[in-house]
Image (cartoon, rainbow, N blue to C red; front, side, top):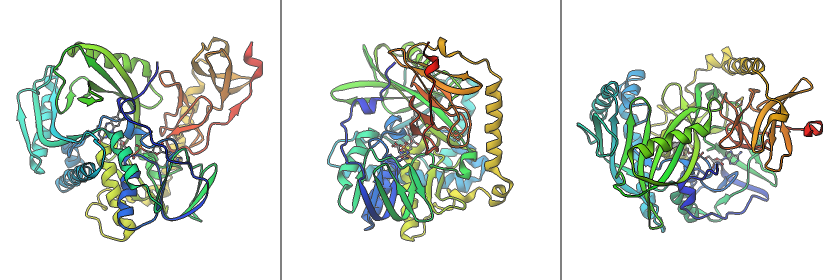
Length: 499
Ligand SMILES: Cc1cc2nc3c(=O)[nH]c(=O)nc-3n(C[C@H](O)[C@H](O)[C@H](O)COP(=O)(O)OP(=O)(O)OC[C@H]3O[C@@H](n4cnc5c(N)ncnc54)[C@H](O)[C@@H]3O)c2cc1C
Ligand code: FES
């Protein structure tokens, strides 16, 4: 099954050169998603020289595989933040996120290209009786923090609903068109953007980043890689989730106008998009912990849901992407504990807005200006005492347990792997992550994740090796696709399996 997001399918390509040779700048940013690009823009406006290094192409990560919705509330619910922290924090979250949406609007309106930015209503609706209480509690929280919220008996959508929270003046855009236009606008001699420039080594002592063909030295280094590269305490505090999306053309409308989140036995996010003279329905959902479920089933369930509620002519796009949920419900932004690097992570599925906010906070920190939001989202809030107790080692303990758990499972045999499939097999007492290509040839890599040694799992829909511990993903040749791992999975030789 080919997977390509609606955003990638309806946007142009960018063509920035790879990094070659040496560069010295004020700030080096790793990652060309919404966090990295917004940060590059804001720092350039402050007169800083910037180098942004993107492993693939601009928007390749979660930004170009998201739903493109922008809102002041959060998917974990504002009231849950009020319960976990307090009402002041709850208010600060809504205010800071609303300001970030305003920043995106100002940026989008100043871009030379059309990026689909529109203000619209946000709807959170209950599909079961049990979910109505959640909707009503979220209404009270939204109203309390000053969002333009009201309650209705139902949401204006073809899915049966019992109660709906409606918040006016939220927004949508085309996230990839936005990033690409932003990159074109800010690229200059003092704001250099490099694509196909994966950072493979980070030297904190000398403040240098290494790619295959170049080196960047910088006073400040920002890991805008969604999950920070390397080992950080935050990895032990976040759950990596995969989520799925489909886009479809309908035989007849209406296409839903606005943001729709359905709550009940399961969660779906629904919107529409007009691009290239064509209208699309977008349905996103079916999230699960990375490496723990079958992705093919997730697409089938999404399609079945869409066909049940809409007159679907054809599913045109399928994609999936990752998010990282922070255990205490707030992102981690700024300098991490015991590290000089700036990080921005733990956004959950709300990171188009949080990533923009992170860029504003980190800009303030780099130019030495107080930020009203820095303390709430402080990356170093995980207590050093917990570090002393060895949270990372605890996490490693989980990894070891997983390895043992995996060792207890029945192994696949190399001979039974069909073309286009992969499995962890045992050969001569050693585990190998084996993949058979369309021509029938077997290849293998080590199944031990290079981040903290968990065992990777086969992802059949995307043909990748996914690590259940902190969400690193690798292609069939072992190269890192995303997540905290920096090094590839080492290749394994197994000519003797070819029979
Ligand atoms: C299905 C889905 C739907 C979502 N919908 C929404 C939504 O509607 N609204 C919302 O607010 N949020 C949404 N989110 C969350 C949001 O997409 C993310 O939180 C956000 O895009 C994160 O942006 P980022 O720039 O931090 O990371 P990314 O967009 O992932 O960018 C990180 C970049 O770093 C690059 N990179 C990684 N490693 C290296 C390296 N070693 N060297 C160089 N570059 C590297 C990657 O290639 C990538 O391009 C959704 C998430 C998912 C999974
Ligand atoms: S062990 Fe951390 S991502 Fe694999």
